[in-house]
Length: 452
Image (cartoon, rainbow, N blue to C red; front, side, top):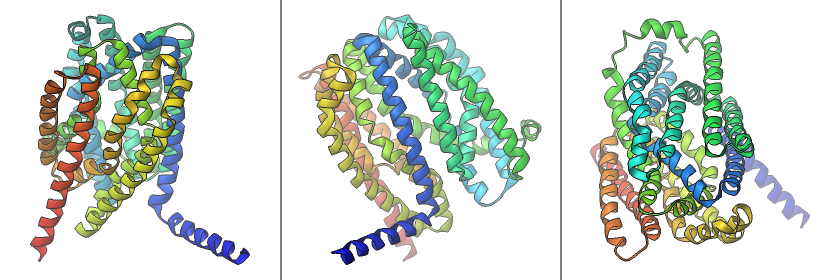
């Protein structure tokens, strides 16, 4: 028996030693640790908000950030994901000139967006909230969230740079500290009695602090890393870089990314228009609970944003293997994770959020299907950006959204608004999984036949 256990121990050690030698695995562990921290803080914040705000006001809180996110889609022209994808390739090639142009493009285009669409959004968001929800206060607070998203561009640049440089440990620490303040400051203000305004002002103060920190850290990198351009070089390069050089690639990415984000935003927006804030609150809690398993897989998704472009440089065979393996393993893990969370859902939701949110537990079961489907779709965004076929992803996502609203229209004839929106979420996830897998499979088959 002792020999048996020693054999098991040696096998486990050998497997661990093998994986520990892989940079991807070590980076994944660091990001996973950060993800657990993020989950814990997010859970703490949602519990405090739910208990102190109540069901109705918690629904308004959900609508504030959903409305800000919806407007934010029109201000996102693809600078983030385009910068990450392009920087990953340029940094791999050690092309300093290209790195400088990409970072200049990122800052220049964000400035243009801020002084155009940003100003319009800041002015008219309260009016928009009045039309949709008959509550201008939601718009007034959403306006502050939009201002925060503008200040956030420097932090986003720093995170992209750390990800490309594979400084995952530092990235994890910085994100965790930022998340800590993003949760603690709003919670303190809510506990002091500032309500919804406390959440938004705490969020805004955290972003301003992260902006100052990001600028200082970037300056330090530019002095120590010869591949990272200084701010003075970027300013000198500001009028030399033409937006159109990267705009088409980035803008197509933006449309693809924003359509993908709509699947998470529209259910709350639509339900807020069709039903009371209490229904919005229950749906928000159910979705937040089911987002907990995502904490285990988000690190994989983030690493794929860099790993797949690098695999493409190595060859199409490596790209195909990396994509299929990550999709299969992530989806399989997600099934078991989701089943575990489903088992404890009724008990945990009532215990943590209170009996007033008990209805959320019933929504978790049908919504879990959409979560399982999304596990297998973890690499879709990264693979489309890597093979530069985002236009097909846009077509599929557009068809999914349009057909989904047809499903919603007929569902409303026999189901309540809340149940109709739940059906819409499940439909979207299933449609997307099947359609995207069919296209990607066809793409790889076409490449294989061309080589033959």
